Image (cartoon, rainbow, N blue to C red; front, side, top):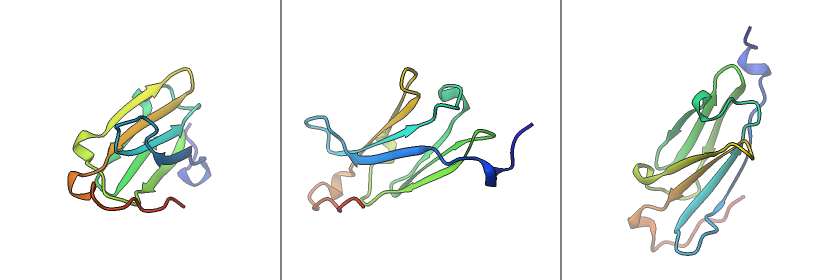
Length: 104
C-alpha cells in the first residue's frame, strides 16, 4: 500500500556551486535513502528548476535554480553508498558572463 502524497517526506537536498575546478555550474545533491536506487526516481530538469519524484516513497521535490542552467547537458549520477542522487547542472553559455546569484 502506498501512503498518500501529503504524508510522504520531501527528500533532503543541498544546492551549491559545483566544487570541481573548471566546472561552471551548480551541484544538486538529493539524499534519498528510502528509494531503491535510481530506478525508482523520476527526474526532470529544465533551465530554471529541477524536479524529482519517487512515487510512493517521497513527496515531489522542486528546486528552483537561482540562475539558468543548460538542461541538455545536466548529468545525474546515483551514489549507492551514500544513497544520494548527484546532479551536475552547467550554466548556460549566455549566462556565463553574469555574476552568480547568491544562494539562500
